[in-house]
Amino acid sequence: MKLRIKGNSIRIRLDRRDLKALVEQGRVDDALRFGPDLAFTYAVAIGPAPRERPRASYEDGRLVIRILAEDAAGWLAGDRVGFDHRQDVDGGTIRVLIEKDFACIDRPAGEADDDAFAFPNPSLSC
Image 1 (cartoon, rainbow, N blue to C red):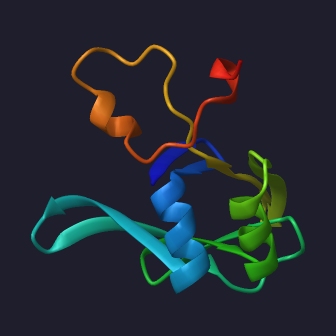
Image 2 (spheres, helix red, strand yellow):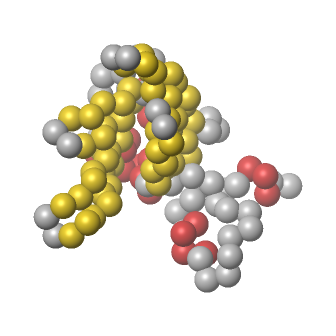
């Protein structure tokens, strides 16, 4: 799972393994560790959200993006790239994007392992 935060925009990319785990187990977690006892944690979880509009929240020091089970299952089985939603929050809006992680077209030599579970890149289709 890859996370990008820029201003009030959250973008998470899930590879095939992550998306399958989300559908089968209901949650995918990851963390940026600053040591044994300090981490920034984030997750994508099955839970209450408007249809086709994942919702972000910050709970107990963790960023959580929730998506309906039906949306996640259809996403895994289909060609949909992802979901893009603008969520109103107190004092503004957060843009929430969750997308399939596609194989990189021009990945530098030696970094091919980063794409081991990536979805096939549609730009490389014949």
